[in-house]
Length: 361
Image (tube, rainbow, N blue to C red):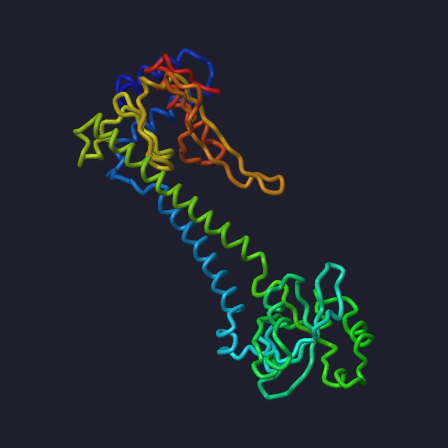
């Protein structure tokens, strides 16, 4: 080992050769071998967009979902669109339809347990059929109030279109005992009852996608904004890291592969190297830190569980600098359960060359 590897790696080997702890010896050997891999490190290029593209894709996905929901809600609640698509009550089997109303009984004919009101309206089907049907609505429905405020003669001469949902009494969310109740209020053999639909009714509740769309779309737009902000912040952090790198070592500008060539420590697997007095992370997150300013470092592992089972682990170097009270985490690649073991050569190197740094939690 001393013959094939540089002197400062031999010092690491000598330090632990006298110890009987085989794990320590294994760690040092692995560190020496990984560190020497800089000779085959390959070309290094700037990755200013590291972590940015994924955030942009997520934000785009949220925006597309919000757009789809908003568009679907609009197409199922817009009168002109429903008419042009033929979604008219009396000829369409769609749930979201418009109904042409030429009459509304001025008094409420029923009230649900939830406080929703039931009206009797007359409608005109596209074929010209004149019929009656029940209409469920909230007490403060403005469009229903406009119909009630319109005179019977004016409404008959100028029928109004109204966006509704077509319901049947067999629907799981239909009004309970609707058919039997309506038959008691308006007997089937009465003049109105002969043209009244008892097995179905219209509803003004939860039009389109319902009130949920008023909550979901703003939340999705908010998430879009958050991920866009995160992408911008990540890009800014990456740019600052490279700016700091070139400020400290102008010779690396346009010659970034020299980072690997001249690195005193290199772990290609985890994407961490040490160049002169700085530690540089380039795989999971771009960071460039002065080891002389660091006073404490340890491996932080976060386990992500689902239904009690660990489905993913993420790793970071938790670092505390001089004149700071809190640790800041810098993400590194997690390679499984052995990630902590693979970090030990790095910690050993740091402890040997920067003894002022505390290692471990």
